[in-house]
Length: 563
Image (cartoon, rainbow, N blue to C red):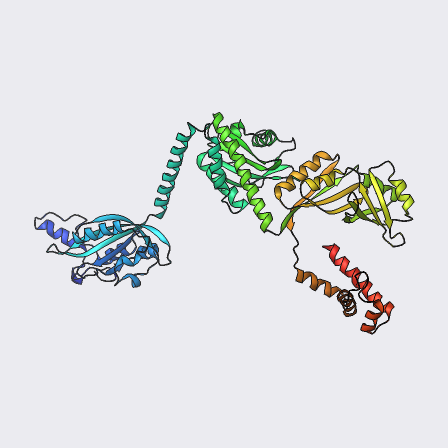
């Protein structure tokens, strides 16, 4: 057969088969069947070229059996054009992943002049692996000698994957069936194995997706949600299998406003810290009968919940135990990921509390000003805080001390009374907020008192600690609201960056005065040098030197405390 697929026949024989059939009938011979009648050669060629399966023809009379024909489907499957394939043995589709056994079966069939079908792992031109079902059959001449081999190729990659997935799932289900008989006795071991698998996830998103997918393989479907402390709700992040439509991004409230169905299942599971199951009735997605809510708790922190959609309302107690243990395992995995991210990422969790009925609110009201936190100092027996008194008028130490009489606030001093913004130093006796910060390794970022509300911004490195701290603050303070909760970038500045920024703030004279004073021992006691000497070295008067030095010191301390 030629490259185009036409047979080596006399063109004159390519005639309409009907006259030959009629002639055979007139001569008393039986008419040939449709399969043996002469067919137009162009139709044969078109049939082979447009066939939905790959077709190749190899020359069996030559030692390497090169291809002499390949159709369009062969190119679609292998990405090799007919112009590339013709003249080559079909082994160019093979590679490292091709098994020897099916290749040997084909070789044996060719040596014996037989037909065979094998399944091979072949390579496309792009290098992509695929499963190829190959059927080869000999074509013989009038003497019975094999002169060609025709091959048929089909891409069965999807079928093989489905078979492998089905086999894997069948093995897992059978293993679980056997394991359930002894599940209660070895539950600790099962939880340990699952925990090890979960902690292999490299990100929170990957963990959520894998957990949902595995549960959907066993049950009807599942989604995994995170806890949103601000909204006090569980928000699904990923769903697999059969679940409620458009469930991802929906809020499942935990504040007592949950209605029937999945909302109450999730709320009850979080509150009871145990798997809660309820039939979901006519509102259930098709193919499901009940939903199991699995809480995700790690210590006092609530990470979220899992909703598992099951096909039957019958739920054995040991399944409840397994899902409860699974929830703890998933929460452990989330905690591990959060801890890793805290160590390696430049992020912290920052949240803001709005509190009423706080002593500082009363102080700001009496002084008719706003309080703005500027720092904490620790040179006293108890830490004290510095607040600027914005918009304060006619404020003196006596007025301030009178304002805090009978409150847990202790005023240690008032400075800068003559300035536009005085600064008050104070401490709060038995302050629950500082106790919480110490307990949860938190950081006080900002504290502002304006009107009847004080707003405190706190930062914690780990998600679990942040959520626990927020929950604890909500419990310990009355009339408090969580008004902000976000991850934000942790500022990590290098030594070089800090020095560069400081130099950009200083004038040349200020930098020179500061550097000379430092290197000459002016800041030591007794002084290593005098102000007169340093002023003379700069060619300025002593008062001018001190002006430059004070300005430099002010900018240095400002840059330090801004950080």
